[in-house]
Length: 196
Image (cartoon, rainbow, N blue to C red; front, side, top):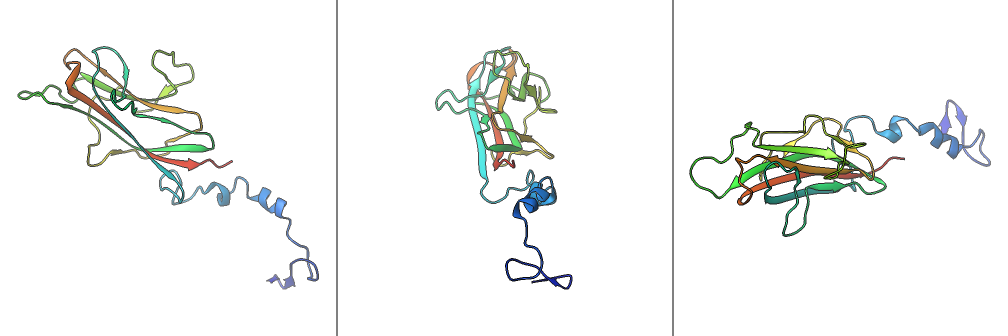
């Protein structure tokens, strides 16, 4: 192989051989490792990613009690626990209300009778010392997404190993607790191998 008019290579060839360790160290922090260019790994899944679709539906909770959205029958929660060695990319959400009561609407979007929140590392009943609500995803008073397609999130929404993302809901007395009133929430994205 020629490089600038000189042969490079190993034994028996003119020129020094490659230092693999030095070459690898030279790549750290570079775009070759970080892939900080289009298509961005936090916007487009790469091969071997694991898709995450955590959806839960539950009867409307008791008014005035912040409640994590968990299906009481299956135990499935609108929650993502990021495993070690991975990061989680949140790309879409879904939240909605449905009722089996006929006649006049039970809930009006924007009324504040139902407030949804997506937070990180804030278990119910705990003081949020290191946790936080996601920007623009706290106390949402409108439905977002549907059974057809979730509500897309743009930007860099990446979570580290051991973080827990939860969907919570708070209702007022205008939303009757229990069936036939139901709350549905979903978190959509993928798990990506963490770059070390």
